[in-house]
Length: 426
Length: 174
Image (cartoon, rainbow over all chains, first blue to last red; front, top):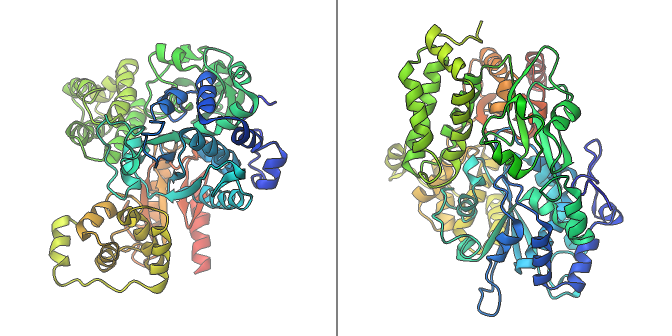
């Protein structure tokens, strides 16, 4: 047993475990037992009971997501598993660690997920810039195939699985699961209308599950040690561990595996060493660029999906971005708005036209040309680009840091307008 | 290049070039991995770019013909993705992260220094064809910000001194 099932094999100072070392550390034990003793429905039940929630950002229960895939005699024979390895959320650097640190863990997780939904083909949708992950995953897939853990009739179970590594070529929108499927089909990565949901009609119209890298890496532990062990890993309401990161002006930025339910302070002041000398904490985005700012008073909250939700933000990717007192909050949010504006796929009007408008207002504000009416226009965008107004979650995600910044840093916005300059630019 | 320029330039002046044996071999391998020809469009463009450095109109037409799809549909894909270059780039492409963690850690000063040293802004190539500077979304290395990806290597904890070292090393290797 272990209390760090995601990172127990990871040491970035050496090469990751090859097949032999991974096996030696107990890797693939769970999968081999699963193939012998468990029916797909048993695995589904186990994952449902474990309480695992998706680690890509939305936090949707994994077992429930899988349960929408049609089963039985009348279900389509072809189904797909797709791994969302298109990590591009600003300030997020956790899936890279898993893929570079322990590629066989992802393959084992994929075997479990594919077996559960009875998919015989799985695609890893990897962002094109993750070159080292690409090399390591190709090697690991080759090894697993040689050892009879991928291919036809795996270990005499009658179950077949091929894993295909697809490398993309940029664009943040590919992380949205239906846009990702369009990209995989060779189209422009615009999101699709839902319903139908991918579980019913996804890749090439077949039932498809799209799971994040970290989500899948949770599965080997759950199958090997069971649901009770998994639930007990969490300190609070949520089960399991999660990767949490801290970037910005802290002494030791980094990424660590911690139990869900750990107080934020243990992460920021403990592992990350607190703020760098001469810097004070002003606020932080708890889970990447699409989350609402939280304040120093929130440091004693625990890292749980619901706890962070009740505080008005989202746990999302769990990688925190720290805003210090030497960084202009208007500049920081302007940077995020530029990112989202640039990465809008242009498919729906509010996002395509709204985000560049927001971006242009920020450029004015930062250069001291802002007007009082600009803040009103920004506030209106919170609604126009909010949930339910757009085709996908990109623009509503962008509105999260904007809305909370307008609330918490109102004085800073007004100072830019009043003085006609950015107070941080000396 | 705008779409109307492409339409003007593709008919009938621009002819598809012949794909090399290696390109055809690589694209055919990709075709075995997908149930649909069109799905290989992006991979095929990446393969061509790997061998040619960028995707010219002639290359685009050749790939479209090979995959039996319209050139404009394929160009829709080519122009959508950041890492497909529809115009020539320098021998070294600096994929410079300008997302939020790098911003907080001072990437704008680093970028200004690169621009000053090389005389290029985002999207531009140096006159000697050596460097192209392109911004990319968060490179997922935020604990070692600022970062950029160049020549397949992630350059981390960038500083003005480090940029000077990288440029000096590049000049030495020439």
